[in-house]
Image (cartoon, rainbow, N blue to C red; front, side, top):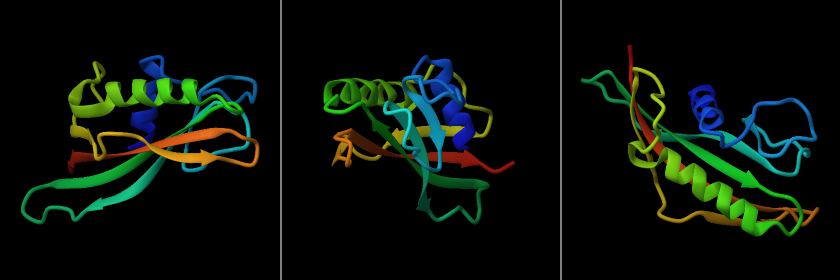
Amino acid sequence: FLDDIATALIGAGLGIQDTSDAVDWRIREGFLQDAPDRSVCLYTAGGRPPETLEPADYPNFQVRVRGKANDYDAVQIMEQSIYKFLHAGNAPIQFGANYVYVYAIQSGSIPMGQDEKSRPALIRNYKMMLQRS
């Protein structure tokens, strides 16, 4: 499902899926590379148990937004834009027939501090419901 989330974010203009290290806000899945500085990474993050009587799964995922050195304001703006797009069905793009909902788990983002290159990062966790086909 991370591919679908990435595609929706790209379609909303909230990142790009380019392989160049020179682009801003490149979207990655599963791991965050050293470049580019401004990056968005999506991670799977467990979830609650699947339904046994209904064909439904409840995976969680995490969005991590990292910026350039000492670029906290840009990181906060991007993280909030992603939140506004994903949370509570606000996304104008249909993720697919199997997606029932996407909700943020926290009402605020979680600061991750700065890495060794003084690049700030914020994360937010989301939950979703997927109908099994």
